[in-house]
Image (cartoon, rainbow, N blue to C red; front, side, top):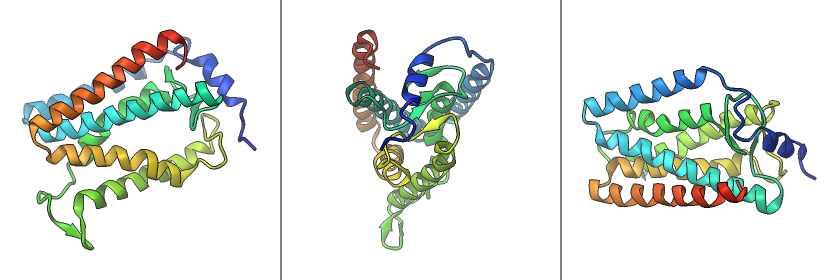
Length: 207
């Protein structure tokens, strides 16, 4: 049995509508610009790569989630309120801004030695799994609120942790250590794919 399947229609009714515009969007944008400009000022290119990697994966999974809604009738996660602008069925602009800086900010706590191990496991993997767990845990009360929903009963914290947030942070922390050429290829390909999907599926009304 689905959990509150009616939320899908509510989300679609608010999709990319300007009725709920709020100036908080401008504040969020200013914060994002400050974080990235500060990193650029100090030439922290590895932190910037981490931020862009997580954000690129975030957009990819949000597009896939919206496509799942089009194909199956309901998305894996659905946002119905509390946002100034619902970009896709599962994400509002404020949360998207947060993910834009999450990889950059959390890369600041990574150990300098990329080969250091914690309990026999590479620290980058440990930090990715741990950060992913914390973010997935935060999503639990959100899913119990009136503004964010897990419609499918088999979709919950564990699946979000494994299939969404671990890839987020693995991408961020691996790009943090990657060579510039590797990052350019990966990030360029990822963002090009996201852009192509948006240019195709938004006009078609699929997402």
